[in-house]
Image (cartoon, rainbow, N blue to C red; front, side):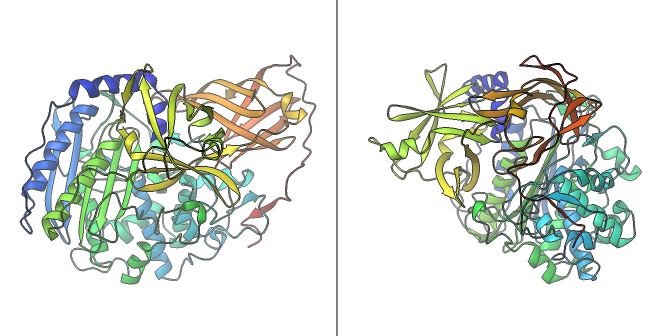
Length: 636
């Protein structure tokens, strides 16, 4: 989420100005002092007000919502326009692209095949998908299994950017298994939570192989039709085409193309249909008409925490597909959820299995990410209050320790350094009793607290203290430098959840082979959906950095600054922990030239900083500082 905030300065500045202008312009409807059990009227009133306000604030044409109480929809409504040009209003039947909520269906299909004995989720994936194979440099690493794919602990790369978006509707996700044969594992399985779309493509491929049907046909037959979903599918269907919402970026209608990784993010649906998935969970696997879609024990396993023995996950909980994040909702022991985002649609599904309450929110704008989450959480909080009488706070606040007036040198100095983060390489330096951080060109103060953590302060133009940055409440964020599993990391606490923000990078001697490659590159064969520019390999004060700019047709240009560490003359690892990190950058030698290969893309040098000829490829593959390489899949 921070990456969306900090990569576009103009957008940030505009949002700050608008925050000042809009403050106090809208007042929430008065809240009753006590809730009437079973009366959802105030829930509807407040959530309608909040939805319209956020749609105006974030320029969102349409939002649809469904609130479900056990087996019944107690409220469903559309707001705004599904298609602006044709003035088609959004309704509960409006069909959106729901992005990663597709993963819940792929995971459920996997569990259904497990019930039938066709997949063993604890056996190596290669048992269900014999074609699977990937290079592995981790000694004594466990196997990639369907279970650790469903929990995002497989260790597989996050994405293969080349070909991720296509111009046609063909099911190309089965190409991933061949693409990965020359790639490397990012982590050992079960080492860290690292979200992976390509892993879900492999799982969908396994579903197709073991079921003996096309993936989308099996999903229809095994889940979508039994659940009574009339306007849901992994391909566009004639039946729901009239209900399709258009996507919008900054008010302009866009055509985002199709995602290759269909099992990970290629689902179409509406709030009415998706509410049936929640009802199935609440009924222990039964559809609303009483059909047993999944066994009760299967449903319970899917919403049980799976990552209890993963130190780097901290207090983050995940089941099989379902995230188990509290969302700031009180009065319940379990919250299940999943979100989705694809250009330009966002989705959120949240459920309370114990109270049998749930909500689905869908939007059709590239700026709708925070809105679907905020609307969904608010709706569920008020619905829970209406059903049980348990009073909810509509604001999620974290308790912070007081500011340390006299912080110790030890507290300050342990944070100083450079960190590999999902925002790139970040430098933290000391300024007397305060710390300064530079993130994507913006300067932040890191204020020490008495418990050893740090608060974030940002001053616009160095003068005006800003609390909100494009939807993020900085008062609700703390940073904590710690050592876990021998790794120096910074843990960010945000919305009640601890997660890795960055890992400290210690400069090391850069091998001669890589120093000779500093210079400018040009990506070859860039597709229309991934346009790279400004590609550089640089020495940033002892740290090798791969930098580039990436422009997708409907999104703002983003800048990447990836610190990498050579492990051989022709291979380097992206530093850091989490999604997209731990992955391998390789040098390929072809026709007397060096080619840099990353995430399916090849880049050729257009100039070397040391002036050497472009056709001089003097460094052959000489592995060093590297464990022996094996393969996942082929020997299991």
